[in-house]
Image (tube, rainbow, N blue to C red; front, side, top):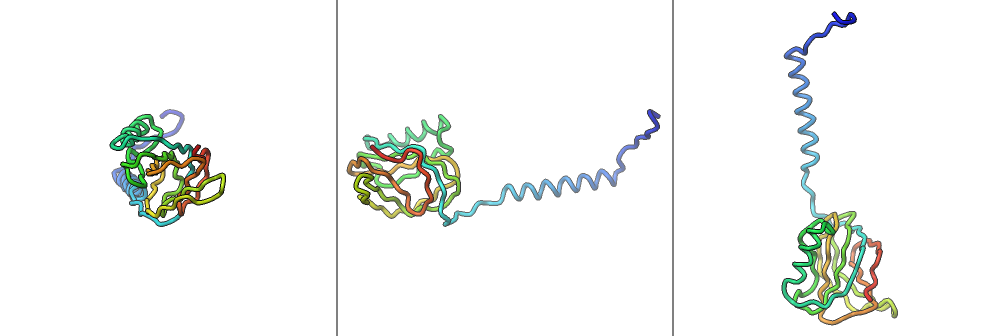
Length: 162
């Protein structure tokens, strides 16, 4: 005896009870973590970190840019969210951080000098949570504008397209 404390091992019943508790807790935790996310129609909440206008060559240019941003861990998803015709010569590129997922109903382009809407497009897109790149392809060039995603609560860090 060391110090008057007597040690005994766990009985088979005690081990069985502990094992059942562990398995039950693991199952509960696992089911909570693996619950499938439903696509929701709530307003997404996001932050636009950067928005730029680029003159692009039609084709896979934007796919290469998306792959490079994903490889550099700028975005969380290798798939871009695209509005418009990918063969158009201009594209507005926005890197966004979606805090709360949801659907946007399209976008509008607003001239910031005249506070006038210059283009509105209805096209629903689902924005999952995380950092993503959004491309808005355009047939004509717009300057001194900002892009507003319809149906989203947005905080802009640098949203003005110059």
